[in-house]
Amino acid sequence: MKERVFVTSDWHFMHNRDFLYGPRGFSNVQEMTTAIIERHNEIVRPQDHVYVLGDLMLNDNAAGLAAIKQLKGQIHIIRGNHDTDSRMDLYNNCYNVVEIVEGKYLIYKSYHFYLSHFPCLCGNFDGNKPLKNRIVSLCGHTHTKDPFLDWDKGLIFHCEVDSNNCYPWNLDDIIEKIKEKV
Image: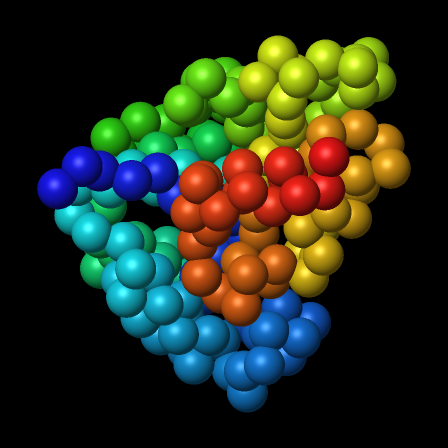
């Protein structure tokens, strides 16, 4: 079977704050962590590629790493604002992490994406060009439930778990949603 590509962000494993797990529908951080792992593994296969746009864990690094190691897929990590240098080094200890970068330019099925933790403007309102000739910013950070929160600013799609009921986004589904929006 051909591998698929997923995008997600802002797991915040072990970040024990109600403002994170409460709006996601959970009563505590462990319930949230368990649900994110289960939902991730429900749809991701071991050979699939998963781009995580930052903020993987906070506080208890050992428990956070244990959670990451339970996830299926080939994990590509893009640094978020909570991903300190020491955490970035720790991610290298995860057997399923295949790449750790600051940001990434990705071409997938002739579509162009810039992957970053933060929303980025990647074009000059080039709305007259076909979608395949434009760059879409895939981001996280804001914990929005609306993947099109910043659409009025440019081609920006939010991939945080908050915007997809704690599931990672399949990149093919993102493309279809953007095509509908454009």
